[in-house]
Image (cartoon, rainbow, N blue to C red; front, side, top):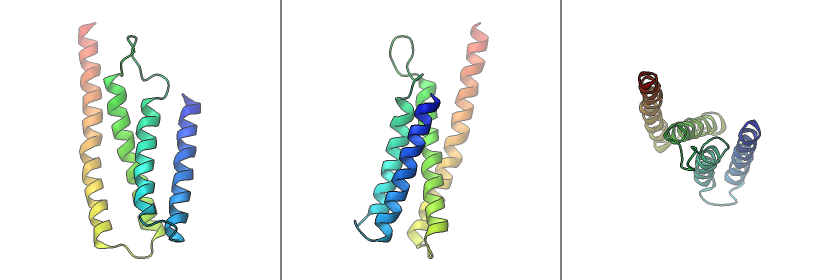
Length: 128
């Protein structure tokens, strides 16, 4: 599990570096946006397919899917906010709106994740 998390983190760091370099040198139009999409996809599917995500019958665990969605939102937010706030000299109105929207989305997703996890734990404790 630790090796897969380190691998996912390394891929995300490489994507961020390549995306920022491509955006800085204007190698590809939309490189910054493409970097964010790739970071989100690598985070979600990397965590989803990492060891421990399957139940005994081979299906995906609901808790793993909730975790992957929440982790993807957090990682994408951190990458977007970090690169926008500290890399760019001037932030456009669209980028300000994106930060506001992602902050709101994160403010909804995190309580949902912890609330659902708590509800499942209470149900499991009651069933025993």
